[in-house]
Every structure is written in structure tokens, then in C-alpha cells.
Amino acid sequence: MSVDAGEPEPRGVGAVEPRDLRFALRAATDAAHRRLDAGFAAHDLSRRADYVRFLSAMRDPFAQIETWLDESDAADLPPDWTARRRSLLLQADLSGLAISAPEVAPAPLPRTLSGAEAPGLLYVLEGSRLGGQVLLRQVLASPDPLVRGNARFLRHGEGLRLWPSFATWLGTRPAADHAAAIRGAQRAFALFEAAQARG
Ligand code: HEM
Image 1 (cartoon, helix red, strand yellow):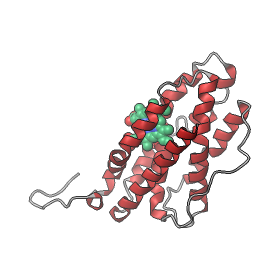
Image 2 (cartoon, rainbow, N blue to C red):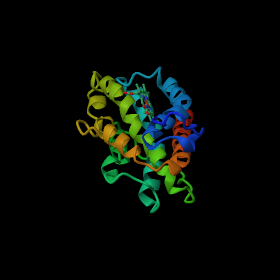
Image 3 (cartoon, rainbow, N blue to C red):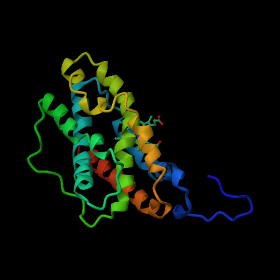
């Protein structure tokens, strides 16, 4: 963070400079990410049952968040947002693994959610691509052709550098919206933790 020497640096989220939003989001969600990660630690995604459990835990939060981002006129989104969606790929992988779509759609996110939460919600979806690369290696090393052949969700965006371009966009969000973005990221992680607990 560049603050002129001699100028007192104001404290708190609102004081974070635009390019630091990513690090503020990471700090604010680090504990939740660790819990989620730990919950999947015993999973070996080369095994079909574990892979299905992982994809199933991703399905509802991805659907809930992407639907809200799609339907909210106020959502603050990158221009290539529609190319980032992965819910349908998740569903296609699960269908390929003989898991049918849920009969009841997950509860929608509140319509009253501020559009300024969108960058934080999307941070969690886009950030999951990073750990996803490690997980993809497990999936592609599976002896089970049904596992290897249903990796659309984890393979999405290969070679497109979607995370770096998202991080650059995140760095342009106005400082006034940072607190809302952090609420969005925490809300997103809570959805993933709830889905994992149901799992
Ligand atoms: C299943 C186990 C998971 C593992 C092993 C894992 C691992 C990782 C790793 C190693 C990174 C850092 C990569 C790097 O900096 O190059 C990362 C980043 C991240 N992961 Fe995960 N992850 C997992 C699941 C998830 C899930 C399910 C989500 C959210 C739905 C998630 C959200 C994020 C986010 C937001 C970041 C970016 C943090 C930052 O700003 O640097 N991860 N993950």
C-alpha cells in the first residue's frame, strides 16, 4: 500500500487502496477458506464417490450466486462475467456421473442484496479456480474414465488466465465499495460451508 510518509494512515477496511481489495478479501475469508479446505482434505478426487461429493457441495452455492449475479441489475461485474459462469458445467459433470439435478432449486439470495457485494461474491467463485487446478490434477489422474471424462467445471478457462484478469478488475473497484465486497465474500463462503455441512 502506498501512503505518503508523514500522512497518518487511516485504519479499517474503508482505508484500503483499490489494488489491495484482493488482499483484504483474502484476509477476511482466510479462516473460512481453511475450514472449507480442511473439510475436503480427506477427499481423493480421483475416487468417484469423493469427486461426486465435492461437485455436489459446489453445485448449490454456484447456482445461487450465479443466478443472483445474472438477475441483479445493480451487480458490479466485470465485462466478461457471462464467460465466467460455471453452474451449467457443474451440472453437466454431475449428470455425466449419473447424478440428477435437484428437484428443488436452492433458495435464492435476497433480492435486497447490495450490488456492491458482487465483486466479493465473485471473488470466491473465481478464487476457487486456484485450488481447482490442484484438484483437477487428481481428477485427471483417476483410473476411472467417468471421473476423468467429467471435468468440465474444473477445466473451464484453461489457458485463459481468468484469475489474473479478474484480480486486475478487482483492483479497480472503488474504495467506498470495499466493505460491501467483503460482506459478499463472507456471504459466499458461508454458502459453501453450509453446503459442505449438508453434504
Ligand atoms: C477443496 C479444496 C481446496 C483447496 C486444496 C484449495 C486450495 C487453494 C490454494 C492452494 C489457493 C492459493 C493458490 C495460489 O495462490 O496460487 C487457493 C486460493 C483460493 N481459494 Fe481455494 N482451495 C480449495 C477449495 C476452495 C473452494 C471450495 C473455494 C470457494 C468456493 C475456494 C476459494 C479460494 C479463493 C477465493 C482463493 C483466492 C485467495 C487469494 O485471494 O489469494 N477454495 N485455494
